[in-house]
Length: 418
Ligand code: EPZ
Image (cartoon, rainbow, N blue to C red; front, side, top):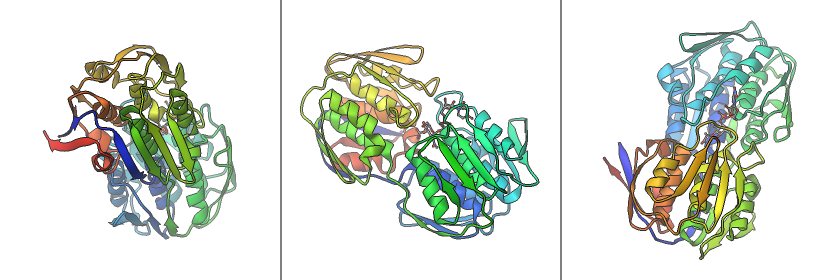
């Protein structure tokens, strides 16, 4: 086990390069099973979710090796349709492999996927969509078993714009017979990135980013080199850190449009934000004012993956805020930890009622999930005194070189073994 030790109170200054988006890289890695062509994914973050996805690909018979920050995958030797359960439990995005493994082998076997403990996280929309493409599915003893003679294009209407279900169906449909239309599809930028990657290797997909995606099945896919979009959630996390600690921080590579809902709220808080192409600069030297309410929504609404971080910010603004989590049932597990640092928060059902305090007090707290853990780090950086953040393996799932980047901005944070 490892922990962060943070001495709070430093302002943050400088520029930080944003990694390729975790939630773009993971479905792209799953997509490599669809082709025998060699794929190079550039600027891949060194995070445990990626390492686990690489382990799964290797167990499927694919070759996946890092060359610096680039990941080279050759799936021509793929020879297994069974996703190992101990790895599936580690990683929500293991479920994306269903679509590509079924497409390749017409069979797939996976244990129910794991991932952050932020809610029920059903996969019913994934399975309903795959059934519409001709897949027979049985679920027993905690496994999902899939098989089909051939995948046939169809029209699929999603009950809710699920990111993972949209991506899984896209992957299964790329080489299906005929055309597939996904209605009420998720609109996240990572979906557009997956479309861009698949079309680069020979797929015929259009409409990603709108609510309707049309996939025309093709026979064969090739290879190529691809740079995924920058991680908008990592960028948002660093900008919120600057807002909370004060100072002036620039993020590089991230597209402001992809976090416009966050930037709008930060300006409402009183932050000065300048945008220049792929550079976003946030400056703040005063106590911010609370935004009255924040509701997480599917893209382009406020991202659920920044809910914990913005709540930590609201805790030290002047005034009161209500933060409502509309996507996941239990995404406030970090709140009791923030309360150990002096936060004044009451959670009722899906809403957190926050009354601003002057400052967090350093404390020893525990990370329970990826984004909640990141929020505790931001609180520690802004706090008076020393904090310890335990169980930071959750944070390592999605933030590469997190403490190095924060230290480069002036944050007093170090990683220690417990
Ligand atoms: C993706 O998870 C992201 N993960 C999550 O990021 C992100 O929070 C989420 O999308 C929403 O943006 C990856 O991309 C690897 P969903 P996913 O399916 O696909 C319900 C992070 O911190 N639903 O869009 O699992 C579900 O319960 C992670 O980086 C069903 O009902 O999210 C939820 O209420 C956390 N049935 C809503 O849809 C299904 O079959 C949104 O979930 C699938 C989902």
